[in-house]
Length: 167
Ligand SMILES: [Zn+2]
Image (cartoon, rainbow, N blue to C red; front, side, top):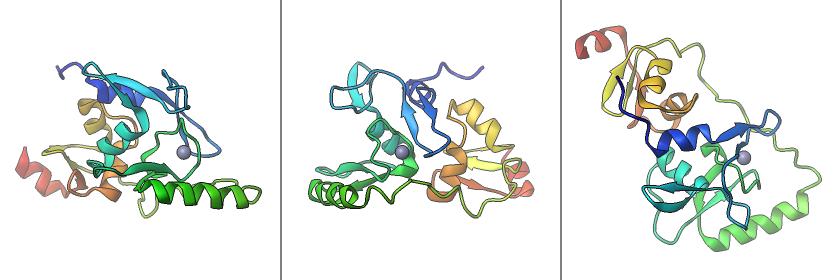
């Protein structure tokens, strides 16, 4: 039996995906400023920052996590990136000017064909498929695929032989 699911699981099930924008909209508690918040081991944590860290690694001291989609409740790691406060302000201003044009259609995961059934290495272990890894690790659907694209140190596709050898 897998261990009980930690806050990670709660985070990754605490949103609904917006089909139009691709945003993962936080459905849990929110700060007054509109950002999602959750308790992690007794501490209040920003949902979008937490999501960023889980998917992309630690946030540098003094850096903000910026939303490319301008949706404060969004925790989709593909819509989040690190930046300075000054950058954040500049971007908001720029977006204000071109808002009418922007409909926000994020590109779907690129370069990945039918790979979800292939063996995959995730966080130090191998699994028969992305789905299996997500199930066992309590990850949200799509997390492992995202990692294989952006964080090869966390997850990468492997060959059948590598999988068998590691069993
Ligand atoms: Zn978004």
